[in-house]
Image 1 (cartoon, rainbow, N blue to C red):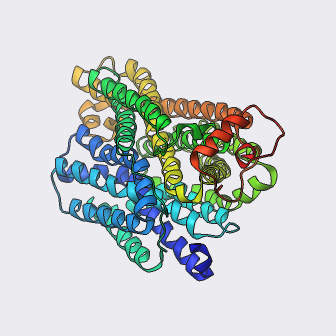
Image 2 (image 1 turned 90 degrees about the horizontal axis):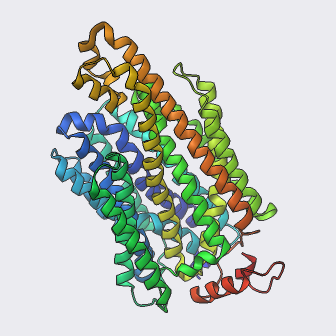
Image 3 (image 1 turned 90 degrees about the vertical axis):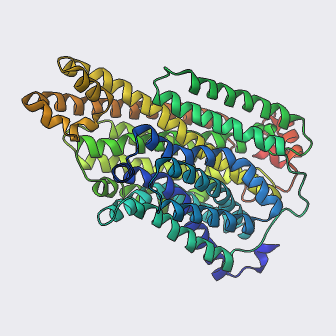
Length: 533
């Protein structure tokens, strides 16, 4: 096996390269949000174009994850990782010289292609390079970087914007990609499926249409308040493609992803838990960062600095969580993590217009601790549910859960925020001229625009009402997230696996699914790994 040939130093270097490569992808999701105002001034992009500059990356990224994992299993994980880093870095370098919004949208989509090749491969490199006794801690580092990378990306971009314009965001992407590419070339061991099945081209296409259509539809329906037919049609196409994907994969002897795997408790519960975690986490980033900048009036850098307690809580616990889950059981650790996240959001919902950083830090610490306790065991559950030669697909499912949950959280919690804000500010804006009223009801950003000066003395009560309404929308969204987390905690406590094994099972995918179906109604029997998980 590859793991037997790696020295402890080599494994540490592999983990460092994986962390840098993963940070390259994760920071590209969060950091751009800090750079958007500077980018809009430099390119003249409209709000719709800004939305697409962000979303083109996410839609392509999420849509290609499943097929990218399977390609890595087939062609070699090291090679796919290197190609992904090269594509990502080249597109980011080109974007740093571009001034046209349409070109930026296209280049962000190309970066999404590279990201889809990078992210699942980083996790499968860990699961195929580390010995069994070290794998949970290595996965813990991966989860910690994946969770905290968003905040570190915000901080890094905010720091750059103190001295440079929006182009610096893309140069940060380039530097990380180059570091990852050099490291992958030097230290990542080659690995691939020794007997790869035929590539499921139709399944890959259906998964792209399904995930891309669903993510696109959710985001655009929220952006248009459901008043345009196009996003609804795209969502319907995505859902139809998902049904077709399940039907197609169910019948194939060697599927891209066997739907019956979700009958395996570890696999299904892990995917559900991760989806809901990232639903809540990225919905929080979307709402809280706006609160810090529009209501509290912090700079982008200071808003990012306020988030730093999150990785401080998350990274150490993420390393310890797999050991704890093996000792006391997944059904106890993961639900506790989700409850802690819910408590963190409930604490954050106590924030007021007058910022209380102690309340904010308390909420972040609970949120970070909960994310670590639920996230690392869930990722371990997914990866150990599949045999070693299918770790690329396991990694891709893990990442699809994260990306789909992120898009859903931004869409749903962002819609709650917008609806509560519009309702709360309507009375205060009712006496304003039509153009001013539309601007006030459209976004709290008017509080930092020339419109405030144009309104004169009438601006003060409107600005106060807008900030209060935005706060109310933020706290309502956080409470919705808290409720979803609590429901998922209860479900996980019932249907989750009692324990997660230390290593991936060696049985084939169809066999594991069959064992799961046979063992679904059995309690107490321990005759197969599928039943135990």
